[in-house]
Length: 361
Image (cartoon, rainbow, N blue to C red; front, top):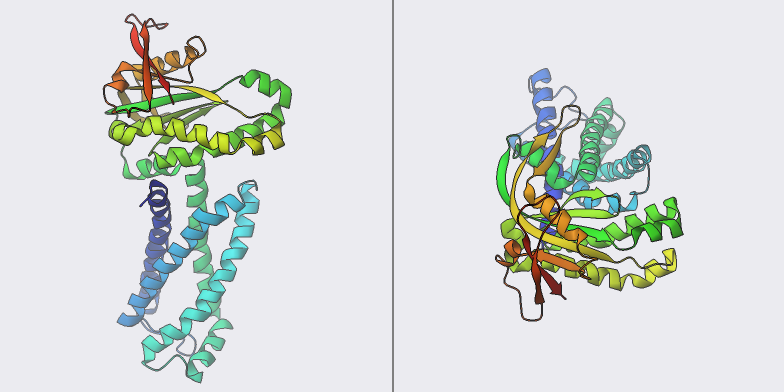
């Protein structure tokens, strides 16, 4: 299974969990209020054991459908819309889906409740009565609440990042944690010249396209975006994930290839094809949540300062990619990836020089 597929599955599963949990809230509430009595037998389905099992499975299936649509299609389809427009259009789409689901699932629930075939006219007569009853309005209300919770989760996840949100809910970084991490500081070449040429609005659109090209390589190599800083992006890996199969180097190579494949598109739309330089370093950081008015997961440690300083040497050393000795020690580079030792160089703000290598892809 590819890293992208695994990531999509991990993003879809919370939707199923939301629907399943809220379904139980509704079932428990209605059971408590009615004392497990069917007050409207002409329209409502009684809560028998088979019906409860079916209802839970239906909630999970609907959650998976909503999550899959959201993650795979609708987020991209409405990415340039305002939050209000996203909610409105998605709500209409899902409402139409819910009506189809209700019409399809209600006769099945009737069959489980009565033991009779859902092809019998009685099942469809009862469905018709249900669709014109207050129970149907109540059902739509509960579905709408579940949907709003899902859409809020989706919007927060999209803006914060799925991994950051997952770490927040699991409490992974509520207390400061020391860990080994790899960082890549990746910076666009000649960004000032490009920005002056395009103007700030067109340049912003270029950055959006530029970062979209990087998305799949970062996901494919198990990386995480730590920060976007103008035309610079900071990518990080847990050390074992970044070193495995040389993922941190592979990420750089895949981004280069993606930009090359999309060169005609950039040339046609922006009259420029962006290029970049980068530095990669491995070291220990302290990771944790910080902030009073706004919480954020941050990394602190000398590794970040060192990586930033090394990246600034790329122009001077005429290198697209510089890596440190600490990283080289953990990698198993294939023969086709030639490394050139360029010296033990002093870095601004550091007392000890750092051994650097130029990587030729």
